Image (cartoon, rainbow, N blue to C red):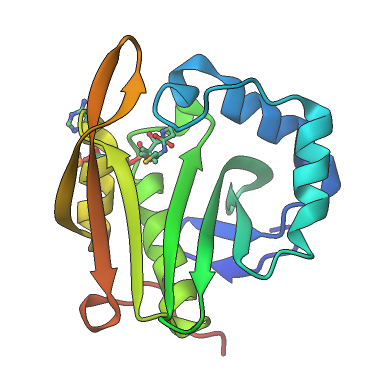
Length: 184
Ligand SMILES: CC(C)(COP(=O)(O)OP(=O)(O)OC[C@H]1O[C@@H](n2cnc3c(N)ncnc32)[C@H](O)[C@@H]1OP(=O)(O)O)[C@@H](O)C(=O)NCCC(=O)NCCS
C-alpha cells in the first residue's frame, strides 16, 4: 500500500497527489461514468491539476483516492464536501472510475469507509447524497452501506435528453455501523 490514510478490508484510501490528475481526468470524462454524474462540461488535465492543488486550502471538502490493497493505482475517488461544522453535516460523493471494477462490492466498501471517516474522525452527525433515480446500482450500493432514502426531487436534472428525478439519501450518526477498525 502506498501512503495509506484509511484501510478497509479490500480497499484503502490515500491522499490524491498531483500526479494523479491525469487519471482523474480519465475517470470523469469517461462517458459511462459521466452520464451518472452532474458533470456537463469536459474537464481537462490542467483543470484537474488545479483541483488537486486547491484541496489543501479547502476547509469544506476532503477528497481521498481509492485503491485496492494489491495496487496503488487509483480505481476511484471519493469526497465529503459542503462540510458544515456547525450542523456537523456533509454531502458524500463517489466515483469508481475504473469500470472493470464495478459490481464487486467496492462501491459499497468505499462508502462505508468514508462514513467511518466522516463519523469517526470528523465527528459528523449526518451524511447525505443525491443520486439519479434511475441509477439503480448507486442507490443499491448506498443502501447496503446504510443510507436511507429521504425524498425525491422531481425532474431535478436534465440528463440524456430528458428530465430525471433525484433521490435524496441520508444516514445519521446513530445509524452508522463502523466497518474499519481503529489502528493498533
Ligand atoms: C455507483 C458505483 C459507485 C457503484 O460501485 P460498485 O463498486 O459497482 O458497487 P457495488 O458492487 O458495491 O454495489 C452495486 C450494487 O448494485 C447492483 N446493481 C448493479 N447494476 C444494477 C442495476 N442495473 N439494477 C439494480 N442493481 C444493480 C449490484 O448487483 C450491487 O448489488 P448487490 O451487491 O446486492 O448485488 C459505481 O458504479 C460508479 O462509480 N459509477 C460511476 C460514477 C457514479 O455513478 N457515482 C455515483 C453518483 S451518485
